[in-house]
Length: 286
Image 1 (cartoon, rainbow, N blue to C red):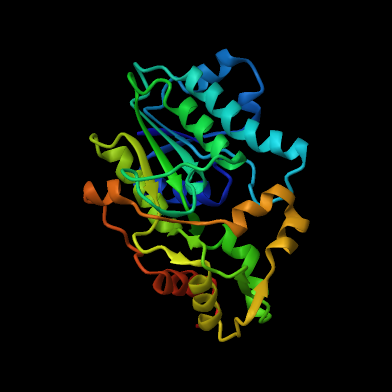
Image 2: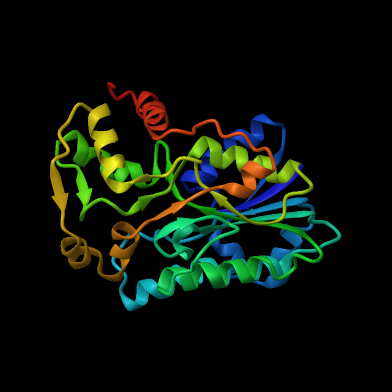
């Protein structure tokens, strides 16, 4: 199939393209310029794409100035809006778009039993999902709410050097949820959604075994043979990132009940095994 992808140069996009090309699919990379130009040109570019995967979005873990808040919002909602407007239901049969578990309040959350948060990140996710699903009546649409994606890139890369120096530590009391997923399973779930006609609506794309921030910290430090006795005060992260610190200091225990109900099999169920895989590929001694 011909598959169009936004955010193709990012961490997930790079892994996804490698996987899909190995399956024999043709990839059309959509870039930022495609969404700033003439809408007719975007429609033309998408005119042969049976599948569209929307991964676009500016990084969340940065200092949230007023200007950057707008960047976070526009890179998701504005891009998704333009993308959906350009889709032709006679051509595109499947749209797969990302969201985040940040839509949820703290505590245990599933697709069937949940509480939404009321902060900036939750509002972004809500608006993002609404835009993605505007043509759901005509185009099969799947929305994945991502947890922290583990792999050679992404959030883990930003933490690894601190842990190697023995400076890794839990955030606050460490009791907040840490809902994670290995990038291999993200790619496999997207492929599953492409190939499985019954897939539609919202799915939590997280491993079945979430942990606390404290357990994540102790597990990673142990694999690196480093101590993990430090504690990162929440106020320090607020000083550094402003409102953006909420992504780090808050957390949920999110479960992928809909994927499991549809018999998707996770390759990486347990954090220790997933981290061992990442570190092994990064040639870090474990």
